[in-house]
Image (cartoon, rainbow, N blue to C red; front, side, top):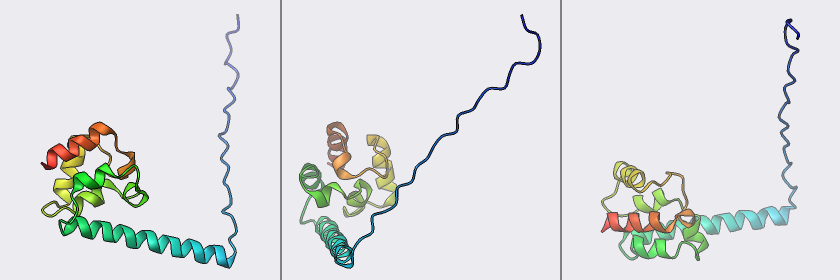
Length: 121
């Protein structure tokens, strides 16, 4: 039996690797920028259609899995576009439904989606 101090433990350092971003040719970069601009425009048109009452939040959330534009839009942004809902009400709705404020529409579960639709009437 050994009564002296115990030998020091080895602490393994966590390795972190960083991957370099791929170098894009000027054409690839221009294509990526155009694609991003197109996505932003489609997202703003979607939010405008919700704001104007042209589309309901229920119909939009129902198409979230199939439509890339809807799927990549944050749920909080979709709800803020609904007339009469501001940041405070949206935060309360998300909390009540158990949805993270940064969740995107395609990432909602069936229960979360139906809880939101029921809460909005």
